[in-house]
Image 1 (cartoon, rainbow, N blue to C red):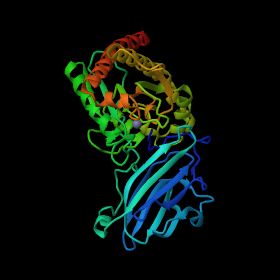
Image 2 (tube, protein in one colour):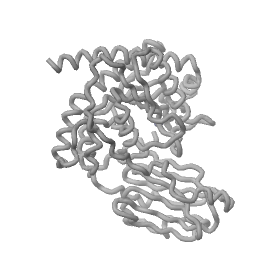
Image 3 (cartoon, protein in one colour):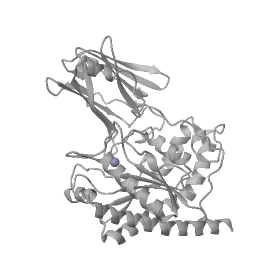
Image 4 (spheres, rainbow, N blue to C red):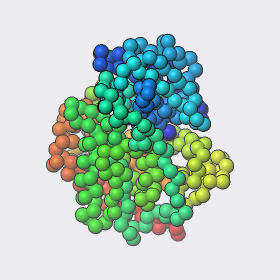
Length: 398
Ligand SMILES: [Zn+2]
């Protein structure tokens, strides 16, 4: 799974910098035209890549990297590099600058979270280019996961849905922009899940019972916290992230629904509280002037109510989809620490529609009939969930 994230992989010390693994980080030539950079980091962090001219440079900006031990001599194994510099850039941010012998452009970049939870790896590939092509990538790219979510005005409390208004469902097609997600041949996860999200949105709107919105409706990069912020700004009653990741082992198959694990849920509260932008964390509760401890407690309280609502939704999506397509994999509801599920106050699930690495799954994903069936199952699930959830809200009130 490809995640650009401030809250991506939680390190032991939640406030620690991302440390660079000097042994597993290098910049080397792939061919006479191509160069590859691999940086192993102790956790996933937001980054951006852009170019500067005179002299020709590639610039990497990162959220706080601890460069201890990193040495140009050991890391650089490319003929295409004249000089490499790195260090702190401004408060909270780090920069690495590669001065080039010849103009090169970025082909692809992705930050992968290690499947064993052991940090993250940034891989970027560059190729030789004409001066004109190089000129096109000059200047910071705003879309590359750099911008942290702006604080959104949350003065109006988001009250729990009670079934008397159309349910606001925010669909979040995974990845986008520079982050393609999984890839199989010419098929990209970011494109497949966007198509699915648009179809699901149409279906939900047709029922008249839902207001459906997308976090992105084109090939745009959004950071993970940015996705939650958008959902909140849209007034989400429910947040559904959509993915179709390839697993390297290749055996994984079928649809899986994730909700946040207890462990991740506890860590998330502490981590979010440690961030400065308290006011963006919890709708309706102004945490700006609260201490970390108070913010953590307030978020815990919201989470205690939200978590079973997310779990119920995940269970219902599992049975809805099982009902519409006939079968599911063995453990279709799993718990994980995905950042995108960490809103304390919005019931959130992540649906892995299938695994692009599996031929049957990929064929399913490409098949309109199959997609329609899954969509039918999700709508069924939302129907059942919204009624049950509203009934429970009533009980709480009495
Ligand atoms: Zn994905």
